[in-house]
Length: 532
Image (tube, rainbow, N blue to C red; front, side, top):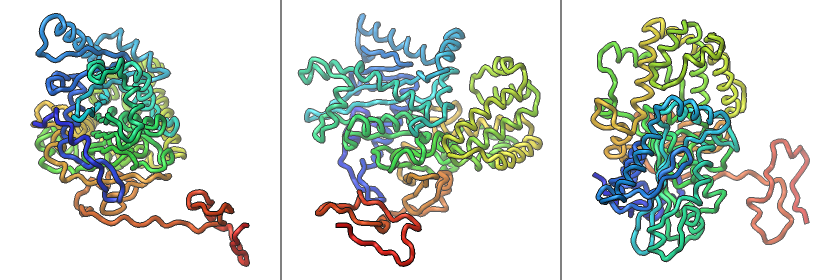
């Protein structure tokens, strides 16, 4: 088991990556430690961390903060009070109260407010500290899912994830570290104070971010805001995400790779391809092996189920990014609209998401096609926001025909069951029932050396570049291990365009301030002269 009291791997000196950029070293210990914390955040299980020397724990659930959490070894009323606080936190995460579900869903109509996180601090010796912020992924409650599907871009960022990140930022003044403040002789020490000091290259604090799924998405946006809005130095930050969706459009950020973040991705995981367009930091793709599938996927093993997954997997090959994911989802909904209400309910219910489908259909005057049109309209808006163009209806029609052919062969229920297994099992960080280990814990413990690094380059469309060669736009391409050789290469020098004219100011470096020569700007017989 990893020593969660050892924070040294989170503070190691930066090294050069395959593209010649400096970033935190990829640490085996830091990857596993981050996976353990991301997993524990789903249960808000911090007792082991408290016993390992972490302290000043604050837990956020839906914007409300809970502090004063004590380790299990404490006695008396202090321990009872702490246990009661944690019980209430876990009950809120679990949900189950019908009235609470309805009220929570109503709150999400205008703005998502279901963010959940754990914040704590650990001494690192020589007067230094590591501050951990672990964002929780999507919870079990109905309305926890709303933010995931709020996919239109705001400030070039996935709107739902952005709203949850802003919610956490609003609490920075209230998240405090009382024991650490006393140790430092301070009257008060809040997360906002810590971030202010992190603008200094000699900061005593290092910010460690982590999360799984939606939590890893929030990790990226939070790092982006702290660096570009608050002036936090990247050298004082490190982050490890698992199954992270993309969070930004290809034109929203100049260099998506210029963040001290790592994203571990299972090659089979569909969620890691969705969200917006680019990940911030470095992606680390694990070329999924048969051994991982046997040990970590709790799916049916009979021949018929295997055959169904193989057929449905053909549809998933279309889903290489958010744009193609929306196209495929629209095609699937169009197919469902041709079935009876009961069949549609059964297919959607198989996906395991507690959606009030009956009520939604009733609200649509009991017309399934009205519900499908509503969903497709929202997805078309998100598509245009991300891709900058209307939905490719011809491509949707082609995928729709392919889905219809498979359903005609195996049936709607079998299609939905295979779909659920292909989406759910590769995405898990918590232990699936019937499996030896979750996929992302398996990768963190046994697969780090097989990870293939890749970074996004901005543009429309953006491009995903692997360490060995340019693999183009689809992130799914690098999940095929036979296509790549894992080797270090010397990065190519950037080719600069010719200049239209030189800046008239003398003795200044004009490399970044002179305009570039536009195509067709010079005509035959013209020449460039220096302006004096």
